[in-house]
Length: 208
Image (cartoon, rainbow, N blue to C red; front, side, top):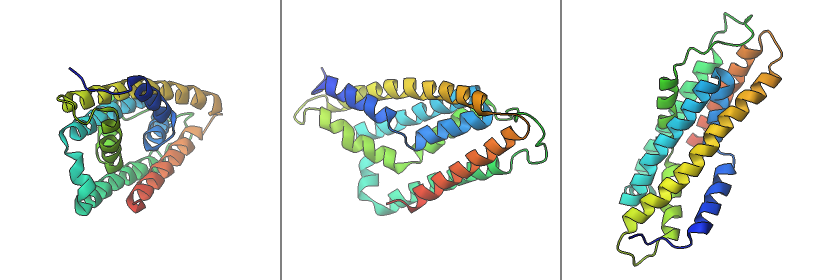
């Protein structure tokens, strides 16, 4: 039914790739540090949901449009960059008038964090191109069920990635609890995360 080649090697590659820090890692850590564990986990699940879009696009060949159209790639990239910068400025100037609190109580509902995770992932064209280049390497070129095989491989990658992303949110929350010393710390953490998001947006906008 499936035309998958060297599945154990694929799973190993998935784990190693998931452990490699990237934009999603920094986004989850930033959200967790700024807003707390619930928001961090919701962001992680949102990123995973966005990954489903990329998996289906790669399986159906839609990602090839980004690979062959410089204009489409540029548009999607700039939208994603602008969104990250928008989130960054929101964190950078959040609660500046209430700096005496130990930690900023999260005003961001987990459902909104989930949506933000989806958008940051879906609007990153490099993720689409990654799946388009990565998944076919483990599918038999002359197979009769290449689409189903790519979907299965994508869901395998999604499973390992989701487990790692949620774990990352818990780890970031524990580290935050240890490193947060007292008054004003929460506000400075939010500003630091806002600066990080802006930097991620600028890096995405200027990347090739």
